[in-house]
Structure formats: structure tokens, C-alpha cells
Image 1: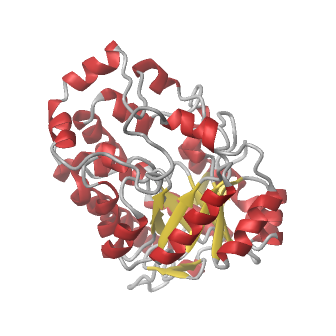
Image 2: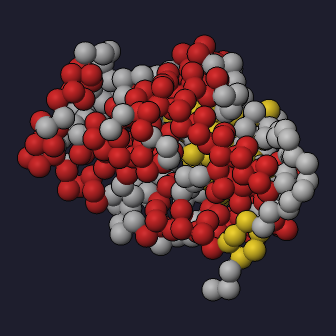
Length: 383
């Protein structure tokens, strides 16, 4: 299978599975516990149907949106995700180049594998810094100051990860950073030598945002220990309110799922929220962001920018989310599988396919701009 044979999310996933050692593929593909929420994230979009308007004379489509003060050429952005150079040596560099080419927002994670500064040099498009709340308050302030200095426009605090989720696929293979594979995991690496050659012939894997705080290379700190020892499970609304004031700009909470929490985000000065369950990787059995979208937009959509992520695999999924009032949608695995399969060329192909699907869908819906999409374009099925 080649990149040119990939025409949708499932094709990219298959190609990534061919090229990645099993433990790494399952790290991307896996989720928490029984992975019920992971599956629900996509199936939730099937609970409603699109209702097109015809004879609207739509020859040109404007799919641009403005979210948290950032102008995006398309209503889909690349959510910040961890460890990208583990999947392909280009990592965030590929994503930054691709996002810049398509005029959309992308992000670098606290667990990112290139620096905020390098990402900013690659693309002049809107950049998000996704970070976690540490026990060390000085470290939190230092990370925000660094992001501001680098020219990051949007601070995105992940609030659903005060402890790591139960990802059983990783336990079965022994996947960890640094690598501590069991025999089964090592065998799966052995049958994919091309990945190993790629990995070991490029610069050393590192986490530049945490280099001065976490020593991953010596084995003294693993990703799992980072979550359990460095992150602060006691984080509360007062802590985040202080961070919002210190940042003094666009500040987004990722992992909001209730109206009450959305209102509190507004009260402390946040400008955006992402309805998210972390791709099903944290609390299994939780609702999907799409399931909660209408309820939260109806309550606060006129006071804060509401975004959603989780399970988005098609342009029609994006249209459904926009119709319910989402300002934009985030994708993770949607670009990670293409990245793993083919680097920058893969990410660009995936974003091109998404843009093409959205444009086609908007024409078929009779919508010349995103603002013309509304809940009237949807019908929910009786449960």
C-alpha cells in the first residue's frame, strides 16, 4: 500500500500499521480501559443526519473561521499531540509545515519533540502551546513565559489529565518512554526494521520543552512517572485563574465537558474551550465532545469560543459540529496516522482530503460560508 492509495482515515491508518512497530502503532491507536469512549467519539456523529438545502447557487465556498482571535483558512486545526518524532523523524516539523501551507492552526505539546521556537520559525500561522499543570508553580510560569517569548498566540491547558489513563494496549507491549519493552514488544520492533533505521539515523529523540526539568534519556524519568510525579492532581479553578491572568491573552481549556465547567471557564477569563475526552485515552465511559456540543453551545456559545475534538474522520463530521455551533474542530489521529505513514507528504494529503470533503459537503448542503450552517441543517434520530 502506498500513500497515493490513501483516500480516507482508514486507509492512512492501515498504511501506518504497515510501517510502524506494533507498540508504537498501538500507542497512537489505543485508548483507555475497554475503549468504549474511543469508539463512541466517531459513532456519535452517526446519531444525526445532514439536511441539505438545494438550488442555492453555491459556486464558491468560504470555509474560513476565526477562533480565539486567529483566522483559519479551514475550520479544522491540528491538535497538539505528544511524541511525534517517535512516529516519524519529521514529527512536529512536518505538521507545522503542512498546517502553514493550509493556513490553519497547529500546536506543540509540553511533550512535543521539537521546541516551541523551532515550530514558530517553520510556520507563521497560529500556534497553540498545549501544556500540563505542574506541582512546581515556578515551572508553570517559566513555560508560559517561554511560550510568550516564542510568539505562541494561544495557551491551551489540558484539564482532563491530572493522572494518566489506563491504556492497556501499552501494558501488553511494555511501551514506555524510555523504551522498556517486553519480549512481545521487542519482537514487533524486530519485524519493522525500516522504522528502527529511520529512528536511529536521525537526531536523538528528546522533549525540548522539558529538557531542563525531566531527564528522559537516562531512564530516571518515564512518561508515566512524569504524569504521576510532576503533574498536580490538586489543580483547581483558582490555580487556573492565576495562570489566565499571568498569560494575559488567548487562553483555552481543553477537556471541558459540562455547562457548569464552561461557565466557570468564562468567569476566570478564558477565551476558548475544547470539548474533549482526550481521544478516549483518559476516562473510559465518558461522553463524546459531539454529544455535549449542542448543550454547551446553547448555554455559553455567545460568550466563549467553543471547539470540539475526538473521533473526527470526515468532512461531514466537521459540518455536523459546525452546524451545532462549534467554531472549529481539532484532529489528532486524523493527522498522526498520515504523519507516521509518510511524514509531511502524508499530513498534507490528509489535510487536502479534509479540505476537499468540507468544500464538497458545503456545496451539497447549500452553504456558501460556515456562518450559513446551523442546527436547522441537522436532524437527530429518535433513540
